[in-house]
Image (cartoon, rainbow, N blue to C red; front, side, top):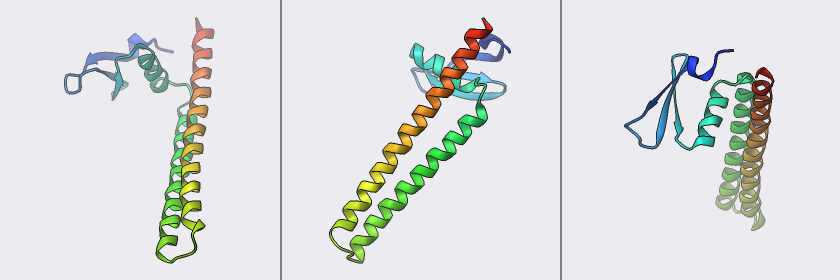
Length: 124
């Protein structure tokens, strides 16, 4: 595996201060200058599990879709007067879907970051 210096070019981004411009295999990525975030950005870009990260992102957007549908269901129950609890239940379910989706995404990506870190540690 190539080292970060071999496959990445760091350049300051003058268009948005406080960000680094990472060029990796021809793709441009932007990361904040904060040191732990730069490491996480390197870990996410050069991950050994890009397919897993893509599936996690797809599942996250599915949870967002469920939340939007729930919010729309709650709003439509206001229009068709389905009772007092229907809009509250729709909003509550939408918030629940948003929170669960975000938590699941962060937990899964944390596992991928730990796996990448374990592989990098074993390589040294």
